Image 1: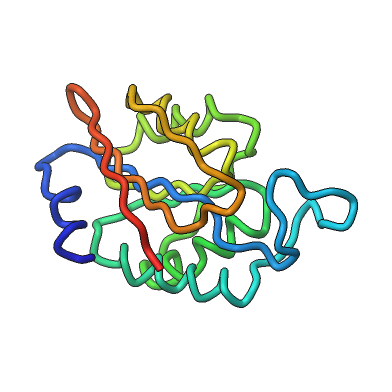
Image 2: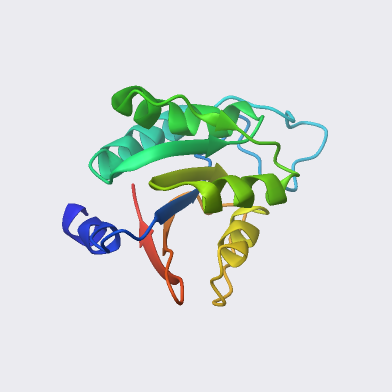
Length: 160
């Protein structure tokens, strides 16, 4: 994994944005969760393990900023990496993609964005990637690496 990540980080002076969906929810639900599911669940035990795996995978990726939504699952997914790097995650409302993109484009260092199955594809598209990205409600292991540059490039990895 580290060797693959170095390819995404080595572009000199180009910002790299790592985009992931939050880890597994404790209620086992996805976008289609009915009244039995919580609107703001914690991470499951598997989700907590995945969040630690994300921190291990990205600890040396030169991340200078982390963006999460107002939901616990995104914040808990980013928490191990934020703690390891001594970075406080910035909360951006899930429904305010324009503010997130503005912050990313104004940033000068590598960044992590933890979103949702319905926001990750839009974030990647707004970063200038024309390749369509789709996530199913059961997809939690995708790590998208967007390297800014003319043109932006996308690398899709899986982490466990």
